[in-house]
Image (cartoon, rainbow, N blue to C red):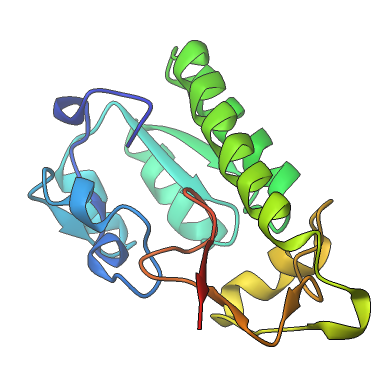
Length: 173
């Protein structure tokens, strides 16, 4: 949503309303149409472009293409570097490379803050704090490798964050 004007967005996945997995629940309220990934609902909107992850069924993607709609299939990221790559690729596809760079810069700034907060924790006090299952590959494969970088008094908190946008917040308990 941070790459294009909201009026360019015909619909979002219904999952954007779920604060447990979406980091854009507030911004998503500006888009009235939320859909599930099925050909009829997507084609019915007659969009100029559909941006869809590679884990969606190939048949769905082909059906949308057969309806004459441009489809960009992106590799679903599992690491922070892949998230950055996906943001930049989608930004290029929609002609907003500068905004893509700004989003990535914001991610880097938030990650730097998190690393600064946890880097001083001695390794014998570090523990893995699991979050939603969808985050575990991201947490395990990042350059900063947050898995194991939190200590007893710290908990990685995932309010409204899926790992594909604002990254993680750290709360002191």
